[in-house]
Image (cartoon, rainbow, N blue to C red; front, top):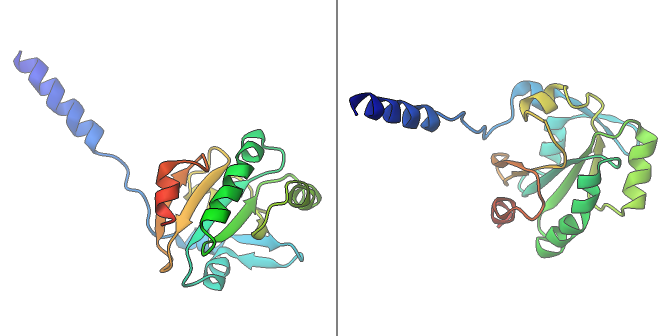
Length: 162
C-alpha cells in the first residue's frame, strides 16, 4: 500500500510539471521574416508593431491543407462576430503563386504573409508548429493570450477574442 501511495504521489507530481506556455515571442521568432503580398520582406516584429493596440488572431494555414479549408467558414464567422480583431494569415503554401491563388479562391480576408522559412523556421520552431491550421491570439499589449488552438470553433479561441 505504501508503494502504491508513493507511485500515486510521483505520478501526480509528474503530471503537474507541465511546460509553461509562452506569453511573449522569442527574439528569434520576432526576427523571422515573412513575405508580403507585394513581395516585400518583413520581420514578424514589424507585423506585430503594425497592429499594436489591437487584438490579433494569427491563423497559420495553407491552401493545400484540407483542415484549413474546412475551417475557413468558421474563421469567417469569427470575423463577423469579432470585427475589432485583426486577422493575420501566415501561409505555409509551397509557392507564393499557390498562396495568392488560395487567398483568392477561398476569399480569405485579412492581413496576409508568406512564411518563407516554413515549418522549421524560427517562428515555426518557437510555436512548436506541428499541425495546421494553427490559431493564436495576441492581445493589445503584444502578449500571447492563446498559444495554441487547431480548430476555429475552439471555445478557448472564442473566449480569448473577447
